[in-house]
Image (cartoon, rainbow, N blue to C red; front, top):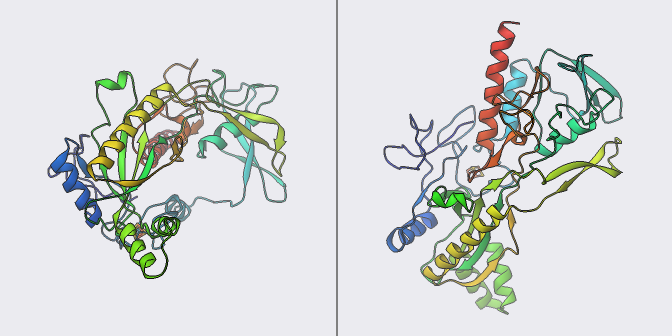
Length: 395
Ligand code: SF4
């Protein structure tokens, strides 16, 4: 993937590492430098580098990050990793990629122990059957549970790998809190370099996790001209004063958000809609989701911290995202565990019920921590690949 981060001998991120990250850490932007200085001088909090999958040297035929601040939704030059690069590698190694294929059924043998085939629709709803020795579901957590439930038949009326009844349960998201404000101190000039490089990491662990979830705070380094312009117009500025205000506000805007820890709750559940279907006749997913109290308390604590930071920076014009800020990292729905009565896969992502069916997805998470989930999904996928390599060598 190309992961960069600081040398653990130089900067302690609180997570033990045997060796340095493969690439040097990203340079610290001007805004992050100002933020680090202020927090370091006036609070007990630590602002540290965030390791991430952005190239700080040419790697995998992709260039070094040029710091143009366009990372979302996708890096235009490929300095930031995304899953398509792994697809290219898989194709080069001989994998066949079938675009626009929608798998709708998983077939098993008569003993219901092994998966024998998957069936998929092409865009014209032509049906195709693919056989194999091993099968890996590597989909989004919502699509994974949907497929497994929709594959119910007489042999498995509750769906595939669902003897526990936990397929579709334990859905989680990465809940957050977000605020932006205008710093009354000197200008930070956000908008140079990648969107996020620095985090406050004091609240990632502690005894208090008995009662409330951990969280990580990001100082977001994105260009604020859009927000500044809206604010200056709303304040009634016109002409030269409007231009001056846009410059002032864009250079003084601070945006903070958090990733708060989530817990699995079996009642947070995906089921298949009884009334709505897609164009292929596959039911829509329906999700019941109630934020766990553990996460609610964590978010309350985060709001308190943000208020302290706003005061420290003599902030004005606070804009809080109402309620909670969803970070769009859904997980759960086929969680990992040692007990086949309350989990769907074992520690190697193999389903308890079917020995040749694996799941490589955030759906196997049994909790959501404070970091973005992609690196963990990739690590789990590599674990699946290692098991398949070993077993296929002896098959
Ligand atoms: S700042 Fe973001 S968009 Fe620009 S090169 Fe770096 S990773 Fe890509």
